[in-house]
Image (cartoon, rainbow over all chains, first blue to last red; front, side):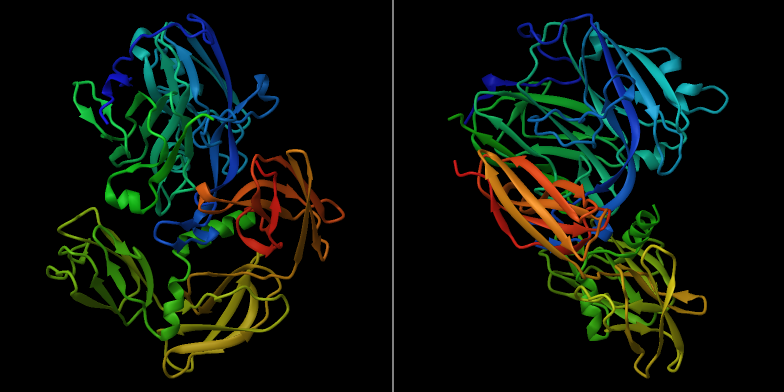
Length: 312
Length: 285
């Protein structure tokens, strides 16, 4: 079915400006309260790869790690990173930081690493900031933004420009960067154009290796990776990002979208710290696969399901 | 925190469960060469073992040491390759034709066979393994259930390199065999000694699952799992700590009727110690 007229490709290079969205006003100050917190993470909660029938022991799928978690102001109470009903998974990736072009984004970060007692930071791609909000450790040059010690906090001040529209990574760039990224300490910014309509559903897909597995949002194999859902007629947006040292190919079954060069595609390559957003208006009910099409990655867990239903 | 460290140590040492079962037959299981991967990608063998790779796919592959010290020729579909490993160490290998295909052979001097099933606390079970050590060598058997290594007894290496001993453990943890400076990678033993009783009531769309664990285990972790089609099996939806009376309660709203069960786990909320009967909860549409 050719339905490309209804498809939108919203990439980091430029998103179509549609009708104004009532929920987010332009030029606002977006405040986020985020902490680095310890969790016990299970990459395979159902303990199996259902496609091959292989079972995995918790000894190989469970580990202690540090993740970004959203909080109420002054870190009084933890909030779910993913709003209920969003289909996104909680804790990994970190909270989706939303804004519009022209907004100021203020991220209050606290290091609550009581597991490894390591320094941590937040480093943001795609937005404007002064060096004091870079969050990247460089001995002799960087400041407290890059090396937030356990029990301490730092406020990052960012600005979303007109060139910030799209989705972007953020991640730990402190001296603990390597261990943190391997443990899932990353998330995404999602920035709309000043008058751009927000999608009905926004799905986060982060490709990253973890232990012996290749994960999507820190989970491996169908059923464990996020089960994304939508209804026919909804505008859905996939926010895709890669972390680690490998390239991946994002593929969704039964769907196509228009690449920036105007060609029709159903697979898109992505490298470390790259990100893109893809939109379409959903028309195809069913249970579909989404996965990395690097075969070894798919077989090691980088695969999930996407369910589209008709409204009753 | 110590248990977490233990879990991590085991995670490094173990791969897919069930793989070790083949070691009971006396040698390492063959490695399948698939279309784009080795299965399993990582195996543990004993020094002196010969590993067999069998190409199950339709295209040719190689098995080649990353450090270049050994390699197969092209292995056509249906063909096999064998290589003997005499020295301990981790041997990384790859396919020269499809370099993204990676595997590893870990060569040890001592290997324990993981217990194939959970064991009961305080009751003897047979612990077996293999050693690349002279017959008659005495091995120390140890367990670590979170409080540090404890002696389980000893075993003697037989003429064929195997060893076995009847041991008793009281808590889930990791086992290993030690001889001088040599130690086996740890294997996990699961001790099941508790009974989980669960019952469900319904109030409109809200279901309440009540749990009791005996003998009393206040503070232990229980996890409510639902059997969900889209999750391809049992999926954890809630967790709780048992109160001082060893009880817990889960409340949830469901828009369909599903199978549910409660599992008693280690603090990782994943390593199962005991399982309740299966309930049906939720309302029909």
